[in-house]
Each structure stands twice: as C-alpha cells, then as structure tokens.
Length: 77
Image 1 (cartoon, helix red, strand yellow):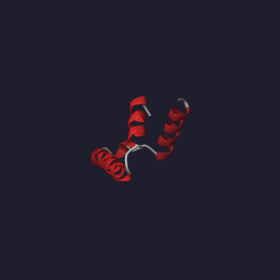
Image 2 (cartoon, helix red, strand yellow):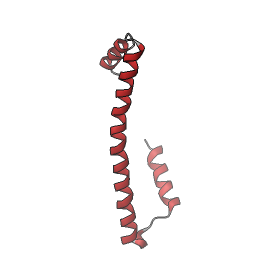
Image 3 (cartoon, one colour):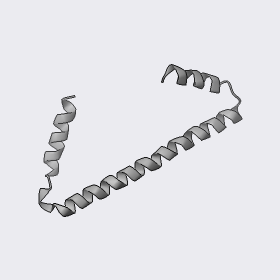
Image 4 (spheres, rainbow, N blue to C red):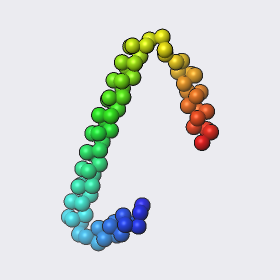
C-alpha cells in the first residue's frame, strides 16, 4: 500500500461507522466496474480462440505439450 493510500485509510478509520460503510460501499462498487471490463475482455478472448480453432483445426497443440511449455516458462522466472 502506498503512503498516500495508508494515510487515506488511517483518516477513514477515524470516521463513524455509517461514513466508513458508505466509503466501503463506494470502493467496492468501483471494483465491480472494472470486473465488467475483465469479463468482457475474457469473453472476447474466448471467442477469438474458438474462431481460431475452428479456422485451423489441424493447428491444435496437445495440452500436455502446452502445459510443459508453460511450466518451463514459469519455472525459469
């Protein structure tokens, strides 16, 4: 947490329960807005991948080979 965020938190914790609840609700609502964007991005990616598979059925990679490649990449970090 940044110093500024920590300061905001400290000040917010000094407020009464009603105001803290309102702030918490607003913060949570702001996260939901981004969640909708994430869901839309995933839906677009899934549609793109499905179209790619349908257009190139012979280009499929075995899931075991793909998993091995991902494991090598992650473990090399």
